[in-house]
Length: 294
Image 1 (cartoon, rainbow, N blue to C red):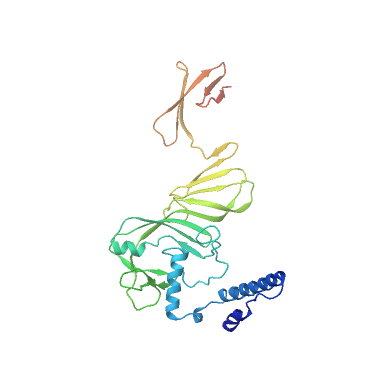
Image 2 (spheres, rainbow, N blue to C red):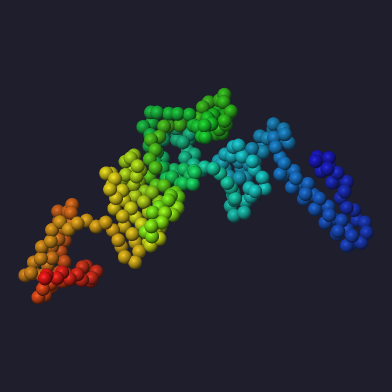
């Protein structure tokens, strides 16, 4: 292809013929130049560069694509383009934002580390804490990382230098967004995006809350530490697993109903009116309930 590229210089059209013929010849030359350039750019590999050229190319990519971004084991073709930002149409199998682990160790920063880890169709919001005493070498995807220079400015996967050391973190997944098969109100099971809140107790779903869209409304489900759950569906009406009524006292003289739910120690009050065979009490939003006595 190098010979073909060099031959393009000999094919540059001269000022021969009419203006229309010159424009046609120039248009054909530009087309050949474009095809040669496209072929070269889509067939680049390390054999096309010297060692110094590869080093300069690496620095150019780091500055052009995004400062601080490391791309390894990747093939960059014309599918990677900058349409609306630094990088567009980028496909990856996982994404982590805890890129400051190594820098935190170098600075002695043992504060809480909050980051996002996206993989296998789910996004995790994670909090990491460390005691500052336990450390480990940075490993990603089974690959260990090493410092490429004494200034700790670049990392490499080539062994031989100083290992990249990080603090060991105890990690809690505090929020997850994932696809999961959920039982719908109409009796079907549908794969839906589900928000999972809380780290839980470590036993199944205990201690976690779930939010997802049901066929009839928005469902919010809280699972207790013992495995019981309370579920609220927001639709035309709010349906929930209500607590049972522990006590109810009707004061005919003052026209007040006092009641308590299970698990409570303080009473709630509502105004009431007494009829011949019934008591009607009014809720704070104005809704009335009639209790008939037969």
